[in-house]
Length: 400
Image (tube, rainbow, N blue to C red):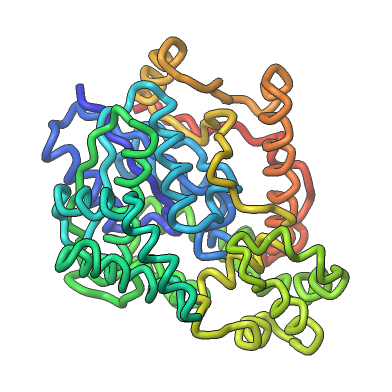
């Protein structure tokens, strides 16, 4: 039986995601198992997930996944490189996943691997450093350096899913992973696009939901049902802007030097955040004031979220300390049984079990718990904002 890993956010789980899982089973057979490494309550573009992680995990299980593991917070809100590295480490550490599957615009696994090898070369590092001194954006500098080293293959670095796919291949190479990469063609609309061929991007779906519009036609029936229940209960949709003044308060209470720890690029971006927070009266205005051609909007939002939560994105040498189970079905339970002997990291099923793990594992789960308490403050109905849900909520378990 093939065991395929997918690194994901499912924010929210939509028809395109279900189609990808179906494509996996069309390729490897109906008995292929699917293990997901999924972001928790906060996501890589620097925002709150639109719905709670256990709800999204349940939608994934009902949409074809067998086991959903959590991508811990410091990696979930990191750059594309850190996000990919964390996801690969989670899946690799299970000891059972043999294939890493991901969507891609080019869907050419060999080409993606060539680009990954090129970006890992010392020749590329030297070319990139030279171009970064010109003061342009990192993306532009990387594209120019890649063009010099890779020629026409560098063109794939202009497509968002291909960029992430390359980072997955880089992580596999760097970690000497036993997993084999497999690029599948991305279906439907572009990464941030609207509807195409009956599919819509997660970004477009979130825009509809946050505007109070119906997006059921793009969601799986189970995701639509679960999300409707959460909305009726005042637990969705969730957005960071609900806590806008609290975020600004946090920034204004910090000293300039306190912000430096969250400036992972070491380029002085924190100075702009500090100055912008003095006059900004909204998050949109803050980001507009901080932005320059050098910094992508997503990077600014990630730093803003990191500062607000008090979470520094994972360092390159930092390792995931445990595997946290968010949900499973019958086949997923069998995988967990196999992981008792194969997993490189301890498997955390009940939150209380963390007391038996390392200090690093305990610190991370306590961090997740504090940030989940902050996430709850952004529920549409404030009566749902009681703290402590991280310690009370166990994994979703489906019979099938």
